[in-house]
Length: 132
Ligand code: AMP
Image 1 (tube, helix red, strand yellow):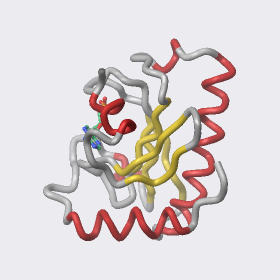
Image 2 (cartoon, rainbow, N blue to C red):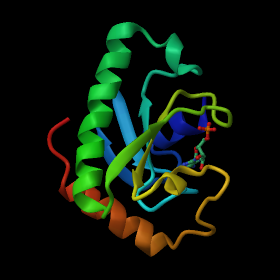
Image 3 (cartoon, rainbow, N blue to C red):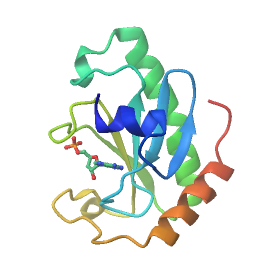
Image 4 (spheres, helix red, strand yellow):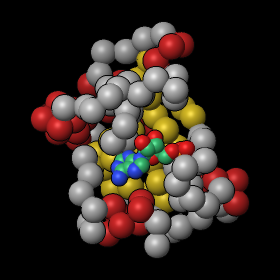
């Protein structure tokens, strides 16, 4: 079982943003920028482009809802979208609030993010989430 499946099952804590039957969103624990969120399918697949077409389309629609709430919550110009997947073998989409290009630099993460700030961000984004 991947670390993300353990988060989805509640075995490992997270700063949850949203959930439906198929997908789960939570704050990245080592954010590249405040509000950096991961969207993952509950069904474990390593490589994102191995996901079936219809499931992948629904995953992107779910990510779109999360991105809308992020954009309404975090001061930013747009929500950037990235897929890496080099670390955790459970497909996930990175959503990162951007003011400029440098905000999407995965080599420059926020060191030791304040848990209280992470909690407040998650609460604020959740309050802006529509049905998913
Ligand atoms: P990658 O697989 O290269 O897309 O990187 C995995 C991402 O998952 C990294 O940005 C990590 O900071 C993030 N990550 C790893 N473990 C956790 C966790 N327990 N909670 C939240 N984010 C995590």
